[in-house]
Image 1: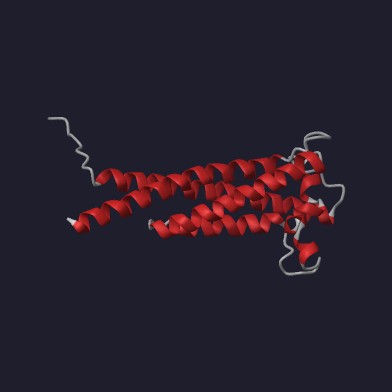
Image 2: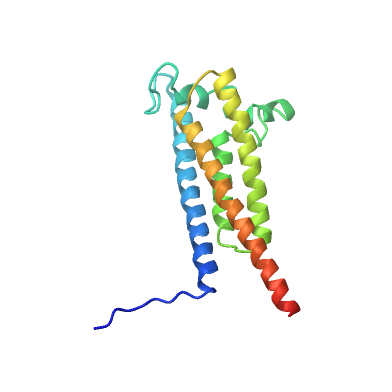
Length: 182
């Protein structure tokens, strides 16, 4: 019996690459959603039971509860100043995280360059938010929140994956344009 050989054409490579990017995006979205849901769970339980000790409350300096129940944990600590404390926009940051990851997961199935631009723009905004919240976490709250930092890492990895998607989709658009001109 002769060994089977798998030939890969140049057409197959972009398809495999786009599937890898889509699957990587979906995996990161799933991780981000799980982290966000767990963070929201801690916020809800802690608001009902002040004595609750979360799994991620490891020490006096490493405690998720302090960060997730701070004034910065809702509306990024900004919405209540711009609108009001009772504004519909003043949601827990974890809710914004869940919406962000669901939005990114939805666009992961769209291989177009316009979708890649939108995803990358939102990812850049998410990373700016991560830097802002990271600053607050370390320098104002003076805490280390495993959930928060995990979200920052997922946001950064998402940005890297989406930059590759953007590069590949723009390159594919250029190839298509060149083929049309020939």
